[in-house]
Length: 59
Image 1 (cartoon, rainbow, N blue to C red):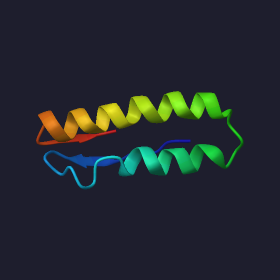
Image 2: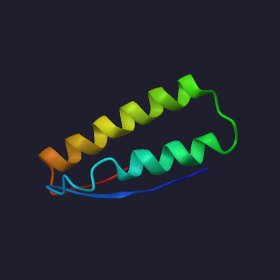
Image 3: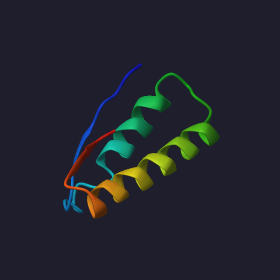
């Protein structure tokens, strides 16, 4: 499985969209909830860092 998301710097209203989509995607195949939680938290933090500190990024 490969997911790619373009993140726009300074767009705080869209921050968290990628992590939400990943959460929904990982729930489908029945991945353990504790693993999903750790992945989503790390991904959300990465999104916030891109939005706050970069012009754009890709996750």
